[in-house]
Length: 319
Image (cartoon, rainbow, N blue to C red; front, side, top):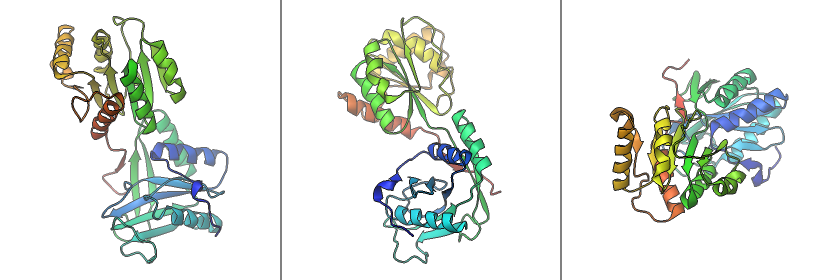
């Protein structure tokens, strides 16, 4: 097996990105091996069900460890592509590969499939692109312990942040969200802010022309969070009324406790029901009273992350 350069690993976190790339390779009839984590014992860098792939050039997209075994996984995937044979490999405790240790302890079992179900990947990619969960089934024959037989995982779309605001905190939040891999929608009355952030390739940009116009936030689905980041709070009610009509998993606003109480009173006066209003979080952020735009962004993203639905879920029944 050839030795590959370290830079031939692209560290992609979200399964939706790997599924999309795999579906593209299948459509263009390019060979690749799909790698799936099917069982974890003890500590692990990635969730069970995490994905990676290796193409015929040896380029790996995704990762299954924090660097300790990914290069070996890549080499074994290339070997699987050459032989056409699927492999079930166990690393760590109980593994036959004594020279490959998992510093975090425990064990990891993976499936390396050089002939994955392209039709299933194509269907999953289409569902995820349509912002719907997708399921994939993997044969785990030969694995020891949990995961024997066939396992099925459900994957969710890339999480989205619908961000409305202006100024330094708005910009910092957009940049931080993009850096951690969230899709972003940007709404602002300030065209300078929107222009400054267009290099982030947001999913959507909307110029707000009046705080009193009706707003529709159609892109806020169960895998979306909505934040308002205004110091001039007159812009908030229309946006928050629209957000509270969506199934977004997190809705929050910038400001002090006093400001949040005033915000809630205004929304009640505008007809927002108490049960709906209870979904609105404020002040946002796990760390209170910060006065640095980048740190406020990190604190708010930490709270959003704390409330995120699971990205990967093993279905209740093994198929």
